[in-house]
Amino acid sequence: MNYVQLCNEVLVSINEVAFSTAGTDFTNARGIQKTIKNSINTAIRDIYNEELSWPFAYTAGTQALTPGTSTYALPTLLKSVDWESFFIEPVEELTNTAFTTTITSWTDISAGSGTAAYNASGNGVARLTGDGTDIGGITQSITTVANRTYKVLLRYLSNGVTVKIGTTSGGAEIQTETITLSNAGEGELHSFKFTATGATTFISMETTSTTAVDIDFINCEEDIEGYKLEHIDFNTWRSQYKTDDTNLSNQSMSMPIRVYATLNDELGVSPVPNQANWQVTFDYYAPATDMTLYDSTHNVPARYEQAIISRAKYYALTLRSDTAFADRALRDYKEMVHRMRIELINKPTYFSAASTIPNTGRW
Image (cartoon, rainbow, N blue to C red; front, side, top):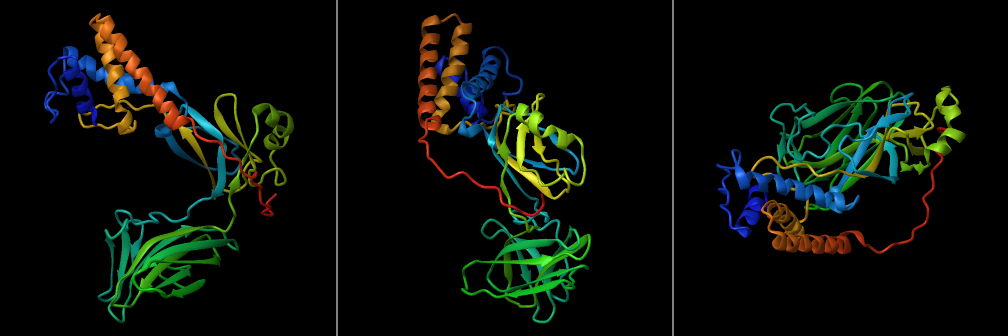
């Protein structure tokens, strides 16, 4: 249910006039209707505050690392962080890798009657079509470091495609990969590596065939294996690693292998990073965001919306001094939250082998 629908469920249950479902009278609500609007948001906040880690409050976080910087602000809207979830990985070098809505960020390098366009097939694709002689193609430049190795992964459909890696737009000065489709009608994955020769590298995809090739996605990142960061507490960092991390040198800076929480609730990594193409990903839980528009939605699963309604009814009935019915609404709310804990929080525990940190030769 959206905002106005939740409000109307409460209003009708306490024998009050409901809002128009079109929201025409929602913004200027007064009296009990305005009270219910406020109570719905308060009820949702109450539900979020019942647990630190409701699944519907989960958010994926990403923090790009900066050379010479060891601490970073956590997201502003945050309830709790899973400090065991931090993972370091190379950054994605390309922009708009999945073509979900457009092919922006890619430059059309088609020639003759060749074309390159977005197509809504599947989850969205870049559709390249040649004219038999000239190409339909796209290219994008990325920032690279000379003599470092990068890996490319792409999924394509409908036809083969030529991938060029070069120092100029559409160029193949570094490498060319011409790949065909083994099974018509089925998508195929292809991966390869290349070594950059300078600070700017172009990745191009093209075909001369009049049968279109659909590019489902393409990714490019430095050829470094990601791994889980070890979580340590602040006192351990201060006693064992602070000296190296605050006296920066070529020897002390490297690819981070540890993460810790600072005293002012920032995240810290150790060792201090010495280059800029890494990022850490992590899991955290965000607080509720108040709904404002009549058709605003929330993240509480639909099967638990009765908890929102019961809690809002409790506030409305308490305001009316209807103690008996307010207590009943409160009981219904608590029973629903109890059910939510059983179904969403109490999960079986599985044991798994501890992960190891690979030696990349960078420290």
